[in-house]
Length: 165
Length: 165
Image (cartoon, rainbow over all chains, first blue to last red; front, top):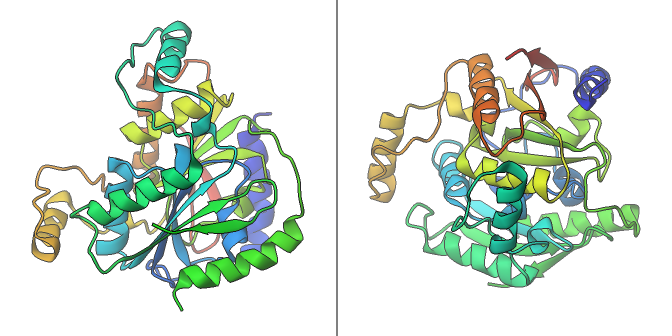
């Protein structure tokens, strides 16, 4: 049995609890949360979000990439969000490699040359939050009056600590 | 009070429930879930995931973009995941626009010309899951023995329905 089968089984039980509800497509809080894919962060629980409350965007590191901007523009221009939270975390996978070492690993493991590609690793997690907040501020696709906040999530304690720009 | 302040407040309560735990950086199930930012989908609850179980990657539509591949390569090559679930959903924001109409809206609203950029809208949600599963299968950066499954999540009922490739 693959884990997919297990997820489908768990979902059968979830459906019974969920019931039928018709929540609006536009998030109630008008917030989009930009964060990491890390398995130790359950965003809805950690921030007290109910179903329908906020957009949750996650990639490796919680970095502001071109695709993150694409998603945020849809979130804001189609779905009405007006606030962004950049949430990185302690002990991040993006702190475990350098681009050069990773490219060498990919070359050996998969036979693919990704030299020169930025996989967006970082060393200082507060600095990476500030960098990504600055990228959002600088983007012509994010209106100036959108509120942008940042924080670091501690994967051991579950605690969020604010990071000022 | 912005919603960020409210999230910080909710997080204080979460910390008390969380306690201190040291979960490994590598996800227990070795699964990465590729899904949408939609506010009506709480992935951990809907799939029965505990903290530490799986990577969760989310963008507008749950689409397989270059940044999604970047994240999956890190997930697999640094964090040991070996299975991917592509999970799109009913009533998706990516079904509410065309690239052309969206570019016109952006031009009017933000004064930025994004003509020619693909914001990855779709019409048929099962077809979009199949497309993205095919993109993963075709990528030289995703090993052939990685298991790839797909499903559609119903935002009204919470039910997942499998989509075959």
